[in-house]
Image 1 (spheres, rainbow, N blue to C red):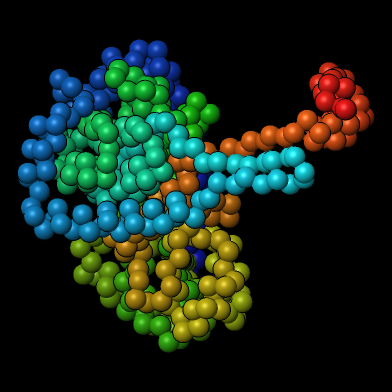
Image 2: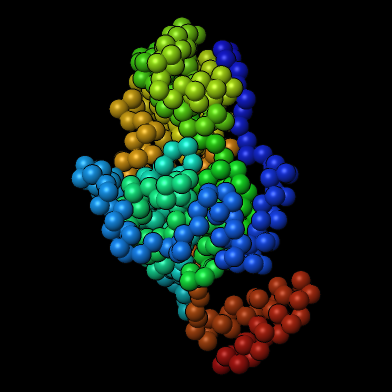
Amino acid sequence: MKIIKQGGHRLFEEDQETATYVAEMLRTLEKRGMDAVREYSKKFDDWDPTDFELSENQIQEAISKCDEQLIQDTDFCQTNVRRFAEAQLATMKSLDLEIRPGIVLGHKHIPVSCVGSYIPGGRYPMFGSAQMSIIPAKVAGVQNVVACTPPAKGEGYYPATINAMTKAGADRIFVLGGVQAFAFMAFGMSVVPPADILCGAGNKFVAEAKRQLFGKCGIDLLAGPTEIAIIADDEADPFLVACDILGQAEHDPNSGQLLVCLTEEFAQKTLAELQKQLEVLPTKDVASVSWAKNGQVIVADDPQEAVEISDTYAPEHLELHVKDTEYYFSRLRNYGSLFIGEETTVAYGDKSIGTNHILPTSRAARYTGGVWVGKFLKTVTYQRMTPAASVEIGEVCARQCHVERMLAHEITARVRVQRYRT
């Protein structure tokens, strides 16, 4: 292994100052409710409407401001997301199994009742995020999806986002951003019930709010700055590899990029191409900082080492620009979403192809995948048995409880043995 360019490895780090600030906000929001929501909205977003919820007339007005091509393209993207979520749901079967005579065990999948979906704004109005949390929740059978999106400062709401939220199936839409939006959904303020799960990305304050609200409700995952890794062999196209690296670098100055090559010659070609593209990139003010600070280029000794390097990095997005894609596909273990071959790219997954773009970052891909229809389902177990089976199980259970000195447990087993023994 040879490191050609060293970059800062990204982790979701605790920021005590942010944690303290968000904790105080949440305490105030929980105590003072909508009064505090309104105050924070005015303070941070200069947004103080009569009602944060959009009426049907306001929703239709927003949609009317979207051109027909945008509406058609959004419908196209959402159809792909919905079809994939429906196919995922079809794989989730109930189970009812007689494991011994008279003993039936099983599980079933039950949707949560209410999801709080956050569609971020900020540097980019990422309206495509609406379908990524709302559609899988609705396909899962969630009855109530409360959706919030921050206002564009001084401009109200972004029409494309309202269109996307509506088409995705949001039951109620609120123009409300930041920590106050997550508290609004988590605590169930005003006219909305408390969320069972909060879903969606945002800045460091939003991420910290989700961390602190976990337990009061569920969350999708804790997401830090976005990241990409690319494994490329010598048959890859340096132009496309450089292009895809910069496609993620434009997100945020803290975005992470890793290129794993198999020869130094290819690495140098890609670096030269990347610098060439950076000079004319419209978003180079962000991408250049991100690449300079966080970009890494490593030459692996062989394909197996390339796999090991990638799995250690555990990227949110992983692209394979290699001839033998099956070799890597069968061996790689740690990634949020995999893009196989140069024909696909992270942007497709983010916007239109149908897989989800709410994915694990900061090496969380070692232990979790991204948002999918199963995120909004609880898999719960059950058991039933005949009297004769209760005797068989009860005799063993009573002895186990006795050894553990849990004598009240033992009694619950023995009384059934006595009752049902013939």
